[in-house]
Image 1 (cartoon, helix red, strand yellow):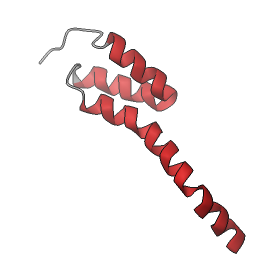
Image 2 (tube, rainbow, N blue to C red; image 1 turned 90 degrees about the horizontal axis):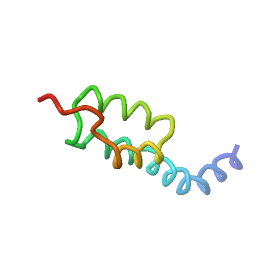
Image 3 (tube, rainbow, N blue to C red; image 1 turned 60 degrees about the vertical axis):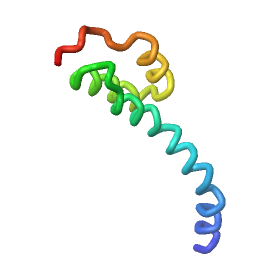
Image 4 (cartoon, helix red, strand yellow; image 1 turned 30 degrees about the horizontal axis):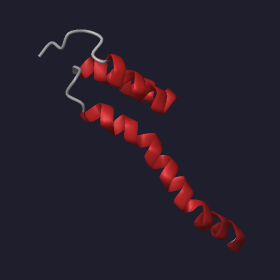
Length: 69
């Protein structure tokens, strides 16, 4: 049992960095003012599956439709 704890503790910093890298695009898109709520939701859902590539697409082509405020 101690072996599992040692492995987890040794890998924790790497796992934390990977988690932050996975969540950061979602946060950046969610805080963006470039798009409306529905389009933002679509971008966040897409980002859950294709993370950084989706963020690059968002930065290049968002908004897809004019923003209706």
